[in-house]
Image (cartoon, rainbow, N blue to C red; front, side):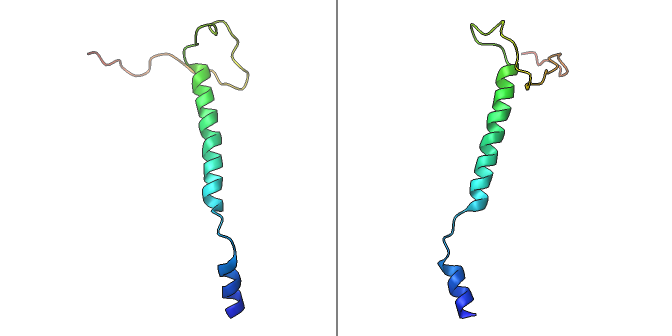
Length: 69
């Protein structure tokens, strides 16, 4: 039992779960950000460029009522 406890306490404590969630979060943020950027208004010089095949088309019709100020 003493050997088991000593082996457990001497192992390096690398935060695997935190590292994996950081990597997955970065990939998700990059993917969602890229899709949002491609679906937004095109920057100057990009108005007539083709949309990449992997970016889905979004319905831009107004489904929410506009708030008048």
